Length: 386
Ligand SMILES: *Cc1c(COP(=O)(O)O)cnc(C)c1O
Image (cartoon, rainbow, N blue to C red; front, side):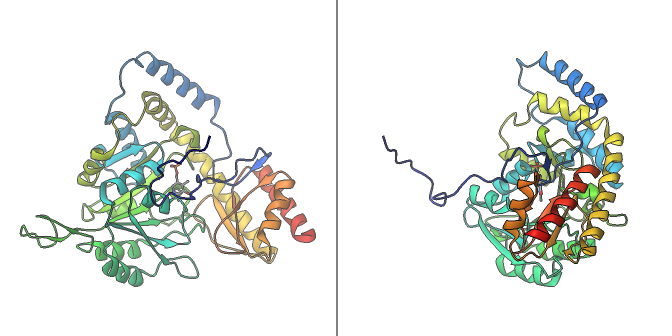
C-alpha cells in the first residue's frame, strides 16, 4: 500500500544527516577521541549511574544545577574564565544546544548567518526551526573578514550568527579581536522586535541585538597562545554572546551526548523556555558529572593528540600536499584530482576518513599513533597507485 505523508514543505527529498557508519579498523571520520575511557573513569560512571538508577521512578532535575556548577568549574580550569553556573546551559550534545538557540531566537522571518565552508549541521538547525539560512564565504585561508561580516550583519539583520572556532572542517581559529568586532556590529543589528527593548529603548519597535554563537566544539585542541572566546564573556559586556562546547571531542565522551554553552544569564533563561522538560536524563547527568571529575586525566590525553596533529600536518606538507594549520583534532588536506578515489582506496584498506570541505580536499581526524601510521602508509599507497 502506498502512503502519502503530509511532509512539511521544505523537507521534500531531504535525507538524514550523517557520515557513513562503516565498521573498519581505523575510524578517523567524525573527530572522536580515539581513546576509550580508562578503567577508573568507567568505574566512576558505573557507580554514579547505579546510584541514579535508584531514583529512576522520578523525573530528573529539570535545570540540573549540579551539572551546571561542574561545567562552570571545568571551564574555569580549562580557560581561566570563571562564570556563575546560572550562565551555563546543557543539552544532548552541542547540536541540541544550538537547536535551542535557533528555537528561541530564529523562526519564520528570521535569519541565521554563517561563514562557509563550515559545519554542515548549521543549515539543518535553520531548516528545522523555519529560519532563513544565509552564508558568506570565508577568506582563502578560512579566516573571516571581520569588516565584511559586519557589513553582512548590517545588511541581513540576522537573529543569530554562528561562527565555528576552531572551524570544522578547516581547523581555523578566529582571533578574539575579529570576534569582538563582529559582536560590536551585532549590537542593535538583529531583527526588529515589536516592543520595548530594541535599540530604540523607548517602548517603540526597534532592532534587537543579534545573538553571536561561537561554536568551540574543538576548543581544547587549540594551540598554545590561542585564546577561547570565553574571555569575551568575563566582564559582562557581551550579553548577546554564546560560546558552545561539548564533551564529544576532546573529552572523549561522544557516546554520552552532552553539550553545553556559556552565555549571559538572560540568554540562558531564554533557552530554558524552549527546552523540552527533563531533556537531560538522570543517567546522562550522573554520567557527565562522573566523567567531569576525571578532567585532569582526560586533558592529559589532549596534549598527545595535539602533538600527533602537528606531526601529521608536517608530514602531509613534506609529501607536497597542502595541509591547513589546525587548532582542532583533525587536518584538512589536499588537493587531489579525484578525492573520492583516494577516499575509496583508504576505506578498502580499512582506514575511514571524510570527504568534506572544498573540492579536492579530505579531512582526517587524529587517532592513536598506530592509527596515524596506518593512515600515512595507506595514503602514500593510494597516492602512488591511485
Ligand atoms: C562535533 C561538532 C559539534 C558537536 O556535536 P555534539 O552534538 O556536541 O556531539 C559541534 N560543532 C561542530 C563544529 C562539530 O564539529
